Amino acid sequence: MRVSIDTEICQGQGRCFSIAPSIFDFDELGNGVVIGDGTLNEETLSLARLAQSNCPEHAIFIEE
Amino acid sequence: MTDKKPVVDFATDWDHTDPRWVEDPYPIWQDLRERCPVAHTERYGGGWFPTTHDVVSAIANDTEHFTSRLVVVTNNKYPEGAPPAPIGGAPPITSDPPFHAIARRLLLPAFAPGPINALEPQIRALCRKHLDELNGESFIDAASQYAQYIPPGVIAHMLGFPAEDGEIFRDFVHVVLDLIDLSPEDRAPLFVPMAEYFDQQIADHVAHPRDDLTSYLLNVEVAGAKLSPEHVRGTMVLILIAGIDTTWSAIGASLWHLATHPEDLGRLVNEPDLMPLAIEEFLRFYAPVTMARLVKDDMEFAGCPMKKDDWILLGFPAANRDPAAFDAADTFVIDRALNRHAAFGLGIHRCVGSNLARLELRVAIEEFIARYAKFELDSSKVVTWAQGQVRGPRHLPLRILG
Ligand code: HEM
Ligand code: SF4
Image 1: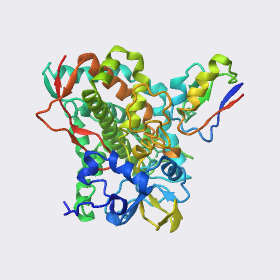
Image 2 (image 1 turned 180 degrees about the vertical axis):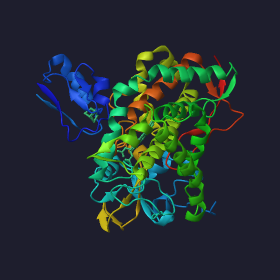
Image 3 (image 1 turned 45 degrees about the horizontal axis):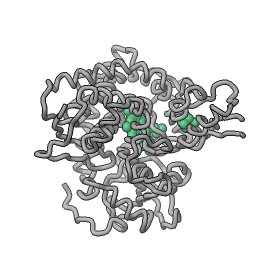
Image 4 (image 1 turned 45 degrees about the vertical axis):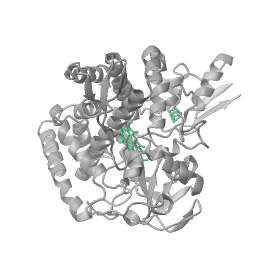
């Protein structure tokens, strides 16, 4: 399971790195980035899903 | 002021400065959402008001058919001296692609979470100073004696303007955002003092460059050239206007909510961990900022026969109350976990200041409730709300109970 951010869609709304700072960080422009390769386990999956469903731009994708 | 006809039906004659809309717009929007859902008006030279999340989002993301050349609805669609699209008078908010990305990119690093979070101690100190100045009185105006001081202090610091000029900034904001229904002839002269003030600040920064946003904008180069003076000044005006009224309104509306909902105030005082969710719900429920667009060419959109240069009143606050997008949209849920709100806009113009606005809002509320754990509206006085595209209390008389 992997999470990723589509950088074309992300507008730096900043919800992901506030909700799930263990999974997401921000770059120098304030856009969201995934920490590491984005691999999720059962525990982090639900947190990633929560971030996904709060991203106003629908920029977060989860492959299961 | 122009003599206004009262609105009979907002579906065919909307006016966002109508006293009923200013007082309580939410039932009006709900009614329009069920009936239209895109309302029309002949006022302001003609325009449309979408009320659903779907249509607001579609327009915000469609820069091909809608321009940001003007983002505040007034009676003048062709102001003299405003640079044409895609630049506009206040880049990046008045800019369209491809220029928009260049103007926006210049601002993003200064407003990214890193530099903004570093301002927290300073913002906290500012809040405490203004709370101290209230002197433990039991009747206060939380809008005019507290909320309105926080954002100007921070913006003055970032732009490198004198800290004591907050009053002057609030006058500018009033002209740009509140006095919108004047004739173009009556409105134009009001902008002269603002232009003079900015000229003076720019001259001072040219003579004495320093480490602030103004000097940065004066010196930064894009493709080997400095920005035009109109661009620098337009962006400075934007940051000043966008950074003050908006956040002051968000702080005020949140305090209004807490004053009128003691159960939410109690929970926030006792469960500080709720704060991040509460902040997002304040932003959704009381979203203070509505923006505008102009239609680029005649077309049919969302079933409406739109004409070139019709206004679009882009109601992010109305989108936030759409039951198709939010469960129990008209209920304030302090711990709402799914909250994909659009308070900071959608698409390429997403608020550059959102990290700063969230920080100011959180710290201002934290400090206020740390000082006053119980308060209610002072029923002997009235709460007044700003008219126009930014909504928040201008007077918020409170009685402190503990
Ligand atoms: C709670 C407070 C705030 C709210 C609700 C808010 C809301 C918004 C919204 C809805 C937009 C989108 C405009 C559009 O689509 O046309 C926007 C843009 C913008 N805001 Fe804010 N804002 C707030 C605070 C601030 C602050 C504190 C600053 C900066 C100091 C700021 C600077 C900007 C700028 C520069 C833009 C233009 C971005 C662009 O066009 O790319 N805002 N804001
Ligand atoms: S919440 Fe969405 S838009 Fe915001 S930074 Fe994260 S991915 Fe980007």
